[in-house]
Image 1 (cartoon, one colour):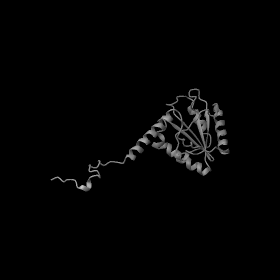
Image 2 (cartoon, one colour; image 1 turned 120 degrees about the vertical axis):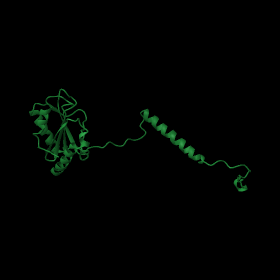
Image 3 (cartoon, one colour; image 1 turned 45 degrees about the vertical axis):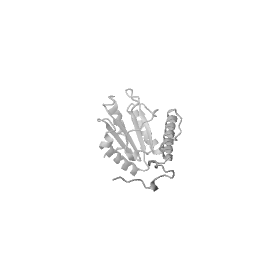
Image 4 (cartoon, helix red, strand yellow; image 1 turned 30 degrees about the horizontal axis):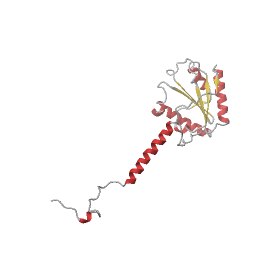
Amino acid sequence: MTTGRTPESRTGDGSEPAAGGPPPWVAVVAIGTLVLGALLIGLQLLGLNVIAPAPSPTIAPTGQAAQRTWDHVAAALQAAQFQVQEPQVPYRPGESPALVDVPRRLVQAILPSDPDGGFVVVYELPSNGDADRVGHEFANYLASGTGAVQYPRDTQFVLQRVGQTLVFYPWSAEANPDPRLPDLAAALQTVGEPVRP
């Protein structure tokens, strides 16, 4: 059985009503959004930065404690016949979350076989207790799967505490077969006291 249309379902001029659907303004907004998105992408590709980038996080500068430790590290390396310098390129090792924003200074031991290596990081914490706590967290992190996967499998770590600072140096004979790497590590182990997990 079919039902016929009632007179109320017809439009005022007697014709059938149009099929249902979204109002036309929805289509206009969707098309406008697509055009605007394509325009922004095109401007970015042309090198016109129309979207302001988020400011990059900055790490506070180090203080006197890091300078003293840096001097001590440089002296220990020089005594082991290594030349040292302030690095000319940025370097950031794999590190535990507690060290992400900690002020740090770098010293680079010159290695003829690896001019882009030999980086030693000096972290400066607010106090001796903080350095001890964060140092143990870092040592545990390096021994864990999460920390270990950031380095070659044979990597050995030097992690020393000097007062409120930490001295960190990772080295791998597979990644860099320089025969002097063990000497570099041994020189750093004379600075401060070792941090263990």
